[in-house]
Length: 422
Image (cartoon, rainbow, N blue to C red; front, top):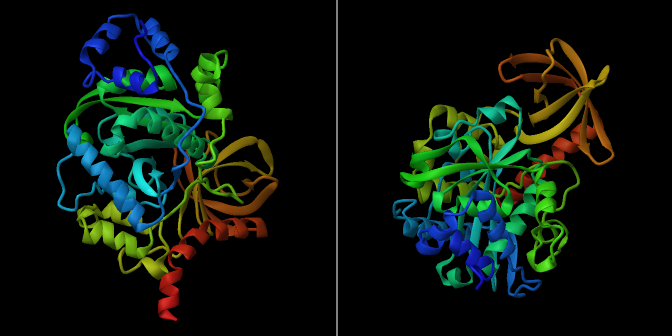
């Protein structure tokens, strides 16, 4: 008798809320054996209904549908309180560095998951978990959050959940330039992420009362992006296709996926126009009113002033700052490796374990086969975090092309406003 029949059953069994007796029996086994049994019962389908599609949510309607599914799902599980808007709208959704991915069935949103890059607001897990280990390693991280599936597709949860995870993985691994992803899960679901996806627990992983999940308990997990394919290969690559998650995530292609195109090494896909920010965070919620002064300043720094000033009144910077994760070197000492965390046309925030000072010239990898050469002066430093702020005095054509490319998203988002003004 097989304990589990397919990924949906595995998912269900890993969740002690839905299958408490089976989960109890499985939980009595040693961890290594339990995980091996779970992995051995995977059944991956090589086909997917062509009515499904997966893409980045870009329109107000798509985001409304995603936030409604999230609201209803979290309300049902007790992770959130009901909101008059019928949507779960959080401050992190307002940032251009946050991406919401959606699964659609016949062009209707039926599943969603968000990736919240750690930036001016931090990440939700900052409120309950110690994330200093990532700071000490100078890792660029993002939190996996807001995973929900429409109630009408719960019976097909396994069929939808796996391709949604695959789409998420392809987007994160190929386009976000991250070092690690982090996630908080209910204790009933930790086995799933640890057994199948090789997530590891944080040093202090268990929180009994997680406010971001309405006071429910949570377990903090993480996965190193660069190490993950090796872990998947070790666990699965000796198995047949139906049990080979390595092949499914890394090599297998699904025509249902719509993924962004990249000319330069950017790390996010902004979608919030001024009208959408106004609708979600002012009209349908009080998110902007509830921000701290520091958060308002952080939000103002990541949107262009010209067309966003009415919805974000505290915009004060001339140049927008973009979150990235770029490799750089000193021109006169290429043995010193640097990481660019964010940038604007005239400034950089970099990480280096070497003590830097004064003027410098840097080579920055902005695209495949293209290095930008910039000169600048260190204006501030945070030696505890190995972070340095540089004001740029000279830049080349590659740098200007790169920064212009980063701003093209906002140009598209404000194009309708320009037409109305004209």
